[in-house]
Length: 370
Length: 255
Image (cartoon, rainbow over the protein chains, first blue to last red):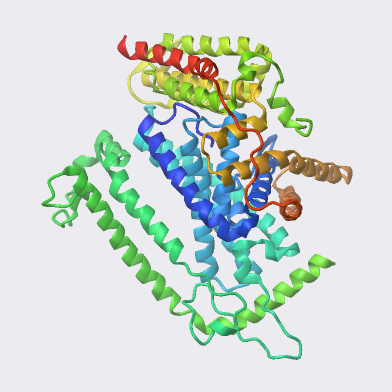
């Protein structure tokens, strides 16, 4: 999936370069928090691991084989910021030294394979871990789904970039079908391998699986002393009753949430400038195939955001940007409402989960030392 | 660099030519601007890409790199060549008949565009890696103000890539000496456990490396021993390639 030089036009290459650079800048700060002052050697060794594991071939059938992309794996194992850094360094070295992926497409490659797979994979992983009951099985399911989804999402991201700045005259529908179809298959392989790999690490050194530390870590147990209370939920906003007993403070999701919001607003408000210049692929397919003759004006055509523009704002680009930002706000509101509605039902099964996690953690460490 | 075994030696080809002697940051700038200019050239100016290829061939000759070595290293582009060859069949627009096949005209241009620009980019990177030591590339990146932490991560990655790959190789030998053969998805479990074991070994090695560095006085930054400097003549030598390319590019747009 390494994009070569000359595949996307200059504005898109520059824009993805800016996105990649800012993501790396954010990750440089975050990685210090994830790894303390051990950042350089550990992230370097993990990057070497990602580099090596991409050379591990998995036979599919009849002589063909695939390899791991590693974005979700790195994010789950060492955390999202270190994951982004490792992927960016691997891609930089591949582009500079191995001529794998174009130098002018470096920003695109880092954005798609480093940032998108890591952010989508890790975000989904955390959300699923919060929703599913704890334990190693939950970690497995969350890893599987997030790895499975992250690869096609990167392919969709590629299709989006292609729609903005593709230099070839291939219809968007075909690019989308081909990219997403192929990467769904790749995603299945990635998901299976990532899940088993994380499971193997979890069985021996559960403390090294950073993403799952809250789900499988055994609470500190003082034999004969006071029995520690149930662990707080990782996503719980530190309920006063549960907070003192927890061995690890509940990690706030606010940074994740805020950065996601910022990216969404930026994309909606600024990237839509370019997106809206021409009819999108679906509209074009509709025009070409004569579907649009049967198209009816939508019922909400009179709404203030009709056709992705804000009425009474003359500047077309500004209007589109505002509409995009408003759309993000509405989506966010709905999404948050659903999220809070789902989450409100969870706290009742806390104690049983803590017990279960404890048992599994004990089994894992016993297996590891055997 | 005696400790750069394995694939590192296959990348770098030692020599003492004007190209080898140029400071790394000059070469990085030159390669990057060359690729940028090549990508910005209109695809209809077919002759311009011939001139770019001639420029790169000139650099390869100056660096005394055998053509076979460069071409073998360029095999990495095979996947996107395959995609480019597919383009004329799937692209839309006006169809032209070539050798009895109905091909899309814009698809042919698209294929040419990817082949020409992608190949030039690959060739430029190959020339850079073949004439610059890994350590020099890292120093050059640092000189070009890449964040120091990123340079450190990259240098650890490059230094230990061989070690980690060797661990992978030893595990493969161990598996195969016990009769294991990977035939299909049924064997993925074993391979994924290999990856898991490799991660644990890599991570624990990272911890040991960090402790070893601390005991030698590491305080968060690596000491920079050799400062890269470039004389005016060296800059002129490095800029010659992109300057010539720029002239070709301007011609390509104006003609």
